[in-house]
Length: 292
Length: 341
Image 1 (cartoon, rainbow over the protein chains, first blue to last red):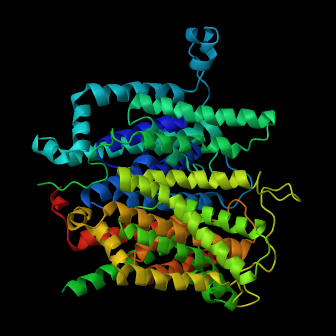
Image 2: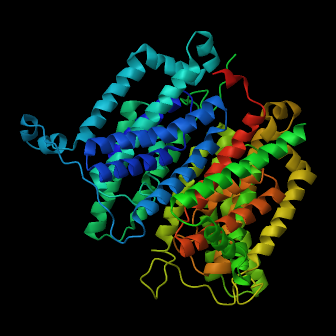
Image 3: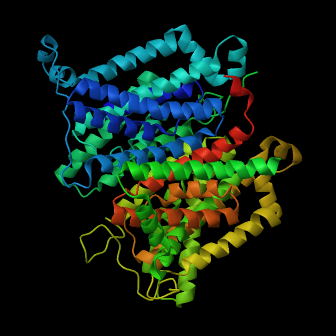
């Protein structure tokens, strides 16, 4: 559960650090889930399915990028509109392709890929090293994103753009092009996250399969203070809460699952409370940039 | 010249949307005339279908008004959904747990409490924005989920119906129902309340000082604080009114349709209300028209799906497309300097 949240969260982190707030993350994930499913279903090839998912995510994110960067449209609204659009398109084409069946069509599923020697380490071995490739990929992405964002010049540029695009532009950074690239990354990772849902977790697709996970990913980004490792930890926290909820439900306690469902949201509000004063939001987040 | 360009751009939007819809219908393999017929039949086909559109439009108009008021102050209230649910909670509570009062009093009290609780729900993010400049976008979305989960908890614990294992509250007394306006259809007094509120909102926004201040804060907060208009106070007030209206939508659904609290009484009314407000340009009259239009769109699409198999999700596509096109319209009329990029 933490895997798609982390992936989507990191994509969104890149975008927000460069100043683009993409509420359409839900739409990106949904699109990724749908396209990965369709591709995998018709080609019966998982790798192509993953590629399809990434492209599906990029499709939505680039639209959002174009609307925000080129046309300067309010990013909150365009993000919401894209969520509707994505839900509509995926539901529409899914129904068109498969009709109203009670039996959900399935697609090939990714299998666990135990790493030979490492998995035999007692206790942590099976937990850490017998996961499916998505999880390994996610860990690589976390580390890689941290390095890129915080240790490379390009990463510093992204930070600069998010804080004060005019200054960054004056310093010679191509603001728009960088923002398009972060939008691309946003779609890539978001689409990947969506693919995880269909290709690894569930094995099928249905209408609104993401049902709000994209919004939770936004929460994870805030909880993680827009830092790749923070996002990863926040996603684990949310995933743990969900696992705890499942466990408690099977144990039969009278606590409704909704109490745990509320967890990530309440925590986010509290975090926002606490962040009064030291505001680490990129200063130019959500504002369109006019060149010259 | 400007007017001509406006008209052309709107016509273009209409054309593009219709074309997209047509392409989708053909892609499904359906016949366009048949699809169109069933679509309009779903709206105008019978008196019952017309009233169903109005029933659907009622919460959209109320919540849409709420969102519009907030947007006028540039307070992005994405939390209409949660505020709606809280309004529903309040109405059910008043309806179930208050001693028997004269019906009109009881109903009014229930609606008023729906307004208050919804307003309170929006007030927290509103206060956080006004006082601490904390972004309300994520905050209001969070409160949506908190509200929905809260309802889930309430219908399973404190407010659950003792006679049924299902997660829902007991049924409100039969006579505690918003007056039915056209029996045997479901059209209820909520519509009158919605229309009445739109008039009130109009007067509030455009004929009172308060409304003027709220709108000014939305246009230029900096100028306002220089001119002595309290940005903080107005954001807070706008959030209260906004949440209250959305809360009314929730109360109206309970008192007019469902007569009990349960999960899922809102098929994302709160989010669609945002689109209604946008399409209506945040003006009360526009909101009413947009609310009716979107309700009609959804009803028509449902019938179209039932009769011709064209998926009803086409309405979502059209809504998203309309918003994007309308937002982009300004760009096409007057390309910004970014056009070179």
